[in-house]
Amino acid sequence: MSIELRPLQALILWHGVTLDLVRDGQHDLSARQMAILLTIYLETPPHTVRGLARKLGVTKPVITRALDTMGRLDLVSRRRDEADRRNVIVQRTVKGALAVERLGDLVVAHARNLPR
Image 1 (tube, rainbow, N blue to C red):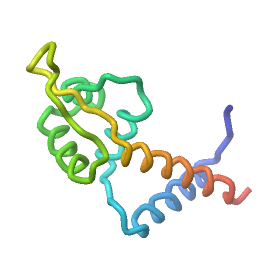
Image 2 (cartoon, one colour):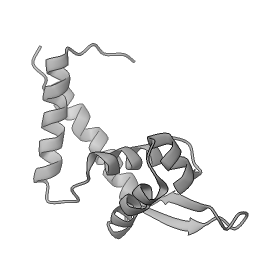
Image 3 (tube, rainbow, N blue to C red):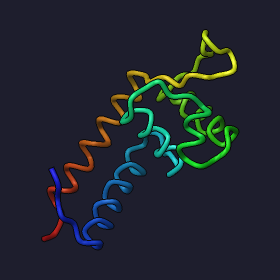
Image 4 (cartoon, helix red, strand yellow):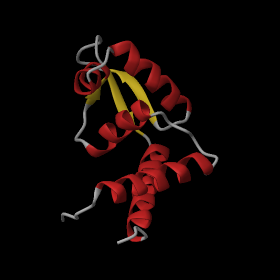
């Protein structure tokens, strides 16, 4: 399904969703953290710190810092790869899945209310 948005409509949508995220009193993720979270939940696992760093074009320490924050919020978890102990596997959590689902619901709700 494809929808056509004018640039102003896209910005109004983005603005409305981010305002709701800031106002809700829940976790307030940076754009980088949100990109990592959505990558983990929208793309097929497994996800590794190395793979996320490559995909986002940042260093592994940048990913690790973001995952530290998201781990404290229980949005993701990490474990060592038993097959290759050098790799860290990033896993989804129930709380993270619910947060991503809520985000999708927010986007849909705001999209329905866009000015024509």
